[in-house]
Length: 110
Ligand code: AMP
Ligand code: ZN
Image (cartoon, rainbow, N blue to C red; front, side, top):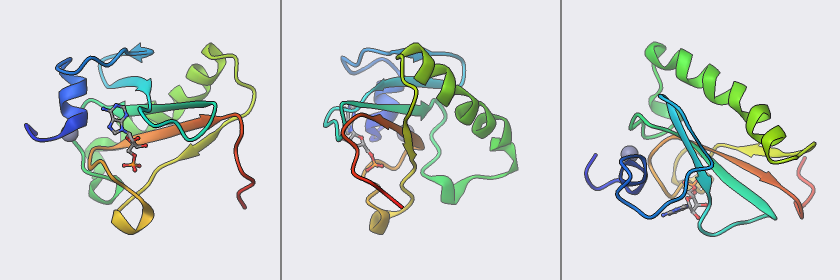
């Protein structure tokens, strides 16, 4: 989508440095980090949120989950938190599917 900031990042139109890239995802630092480490595992496909997933996205979702420990290990993290906001009331700001991976200085949750 032409007006989607994460589609622009995926297309390489922004000055965003990728930590990791493959055919399905890009991984890059959050511009406003909420923890010592805060990165976004972002689908290349424009999917607005978990709410609009369908059966065609099963492989992508499995891949994104499987990548979490791979990226964490690359960054030397033994502990991390994963967040996926879905919808405005959850705090979702960017309507393009992404996982937050956070570590360091995290408030207790749950
Ligand atoms: P969410 O609120 O779950 O939709 O998360 C969107 C995240 O994207 C926020 O934490 C923002 O700080 C982050 N963000 C917005 N624009 C950019 C950008 N250009 N580069 C990196 N992160 C961004
Ligand atoms: Zn998009």
